[in-house]
Length: 82
Image 1 (cartoon, rainbow, N blue to C red):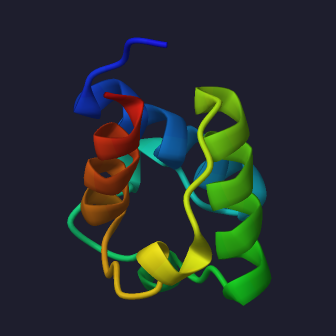
Image 2: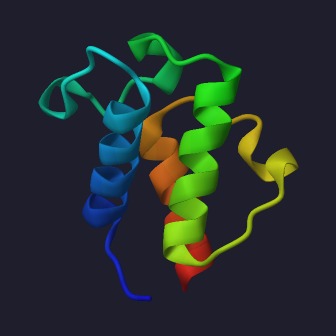
């Protein structure tokens, strides 16, 4: 699948907005973390898993543990698409 980083960010923010009540996808800043929008650990796992499934990639959780922002997550997903 060929996607650019902006499309990956769009996937992440769409999934996050679907997962969290009261969050408007237009207000999601990719320079912040999912937790900044009220996501708990389970929400984060759900979002990450759904997007990896959509992109048809697998990334070990250990490689995702230190990522702080939606932007950083999009970078990591983008690396695995190449």
